[in-house]
Image (cartoon, helix red, strand yellow):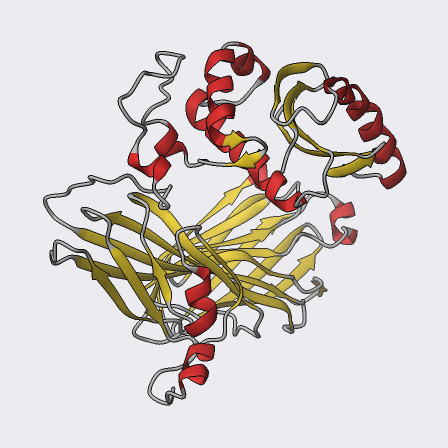
Length: 435
């Protein structure tokens, strides 16, 4: 629990202060900046949690502001830091930009929010959608209501009661980003899959949703065979607060009452060896006064899938000139401000290959001895496909009124941090076949 919360400017001057428990002297905030500077000198980095004279200082920095919580008890540091981050999100929702000026212009509403979001040092309602129902930016004061919104008194603080839609629908997107680093000799140095399940819920009432995935642990726990369906073992799973964690821990059922509208239900990671989906083989030849590239791109995924909006960004020396290109598919452009050529392929079917040849003039001799260039970067998006093989087995929607809802599921695989290092240039009197 937090004893007090402060908002400070970049020099440590107090802009807003709220004392919740009265067990910490408010003058203790004067020690924050000296402690922070002292720790940064010692550790060469910012420390979010510090202790001095029996008082814990926990802070986050946002733009030119510090949000600081003081606590005398042995509190849960992560809970308080999470609360401070939620404060920045809520303030940003209200004021558009969270800066020192917006703090000075909105004292009244900030104190109202601090009183609603924390009670006697314990975090309460932190969902901006719910807070905006009864704390309005226009009035700058708490409106008198007959009763507080149901979401405040209800255990489901992220959803209001009385939501109604003429057509009940759920849109579910399974989005996976592939992080990949390939060495200049073609070895995969690092690969992982970062996944997220995002939802848009337009459902009436207080529906109960249950989501089933081809989860390996669930198959093992229930003794079910996963021979028909490939099972996926997810790591570092993070859920939205609406998911019942105890239910998931017991039987791996993802059960929840969703927020209204758009939200991220869960994220996960697979630390696995990923076969590069878009592979690039590169040959670079340097000659006196010119440099030539030959790049072969391969779509190494199933033939029934197609990669959209593929971009292959190849770094070139800073002072090249006279670009000439020839490619079997797509379009190529030289982008001098990025010192790169950009090869764009609008649609790249699985199993296909494409070839690019590029020729540049190289007037400067020093570039022949240039240091290693940045790696090739690849961008792409493959709809109706997940590299991990994760599948939505079912999405059940139960609401006491008994209406029928339409669930829509979409799969997308895209690039994350996807790079391939280039081989060293070949110095040759011969040359690649002429363009």
